[in-house]
Length: 253
Image (cartoon, rainbow, N blue to C red):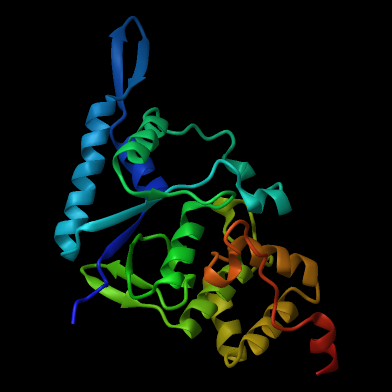
């Protein structure tokens, strides 16, 4: 029987950013004048080399590269999402490299979605087809995902994915501009999960108790943390995640 697990799913944004940043070169012209240079052909070649290296490591040849849309649905519901990055300069050749990827590689851009959301949707639409190659921790929140990590295929169960998502909703991600529940880090979040482990309802009840009943703040952080999967995409637009139990239901339990 032919194995249809034959397509690599790559986060184009992440790989392009790292390569473009690594290949910037400061040039000193004398008299105190410094400029920053980047040779786009060198950057393009480095991306191709990286993809070929991944192919060799995994033994797979087909590639789909996901790229973020210029619009972002998270910013529509939370203007502070990634607002802390506005002043951060992107590498000089990041934009040209993305254009190169669009011209030379099979790629997918879904309107209003980030690259990792697109990966989540594709990976859950066809879990037996795609192998995710990314070290982004958000990939660990994708149910039934197969992730290439340290030379092995890591399988993420539905329960593991949900618990990883709840962890993110509790502790937030300051690098993305959402901060979770005050005072909650990775260790405390995992203790809360251990205490409430069982069903999605029991885990969300633990979240609401940790947020001290501030269901609105808890939901906003959860929606920032939730990487989209097939059931959260209607083919044209994202479907906002909703909790399995309400604050009123928790109070009446």
